[in-house]
Length: 272
Image 1 (cartoon, rainbow, N blue to C red):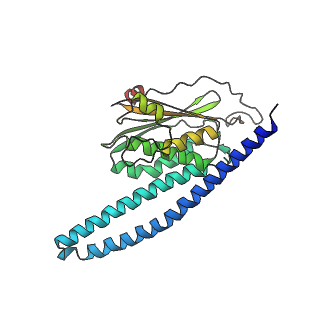
Image 2: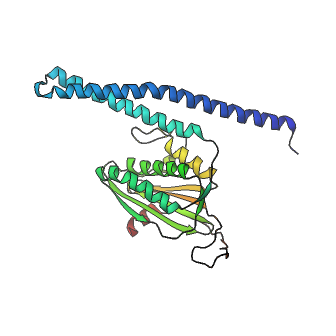
Image 3: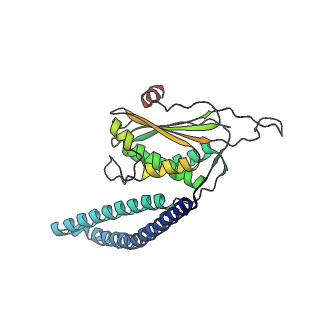
């Protein structure tokens, strides 16, 4: 039997966390607004300096470099705030039947131009006609963006990004593998911790947000990594017990669970 005082304390703690999340989110928005104003004005300053490039003096060149340095710092702060807001929002997950393969393809198409400029090549294995998953599409897209960003940051000289999806009993397993710098055991153990990052410019919130999103969906996320060879993240999400697309109407598929082992990044790279 749950003690009434314990229940009250739990409810109060939940309310305090929700209040702090709203407070932090509001503060981040207040900081983001002047940053956006700064970014606009710095862009205008850069245009002014570039117009006089034909008669550029050493002083003008120094000023332009400083403007661009400020632009990079503003962009970095905006990126930190954006990650923080995604983490602080949390909130209710509005799940519905969605095609995970379609969502993955859309996100990959969105990030592909940037990845190409960074020398990152995509290798994609997304089987057609997999059953639907029960998910909040917007949140799953955010989780995927975080995983792909993490992979690209691990490959500063370019490399291979392998994205694979398969059915695993009553789940769909999505594996994201990179050929980057990898992580040691200590880094693997801490990679989902808030504000822990081994990457230059990393906020330490991307993977923490991804794990929370996956767990809110009743899924799991696992990671294996080999220093110097790459890292593989495996996400499993529960399927919708659905009417089979290729079966007579009214006949249900019964989904049997199977165990899911994290992917081996070295094996994925060899198989690609």
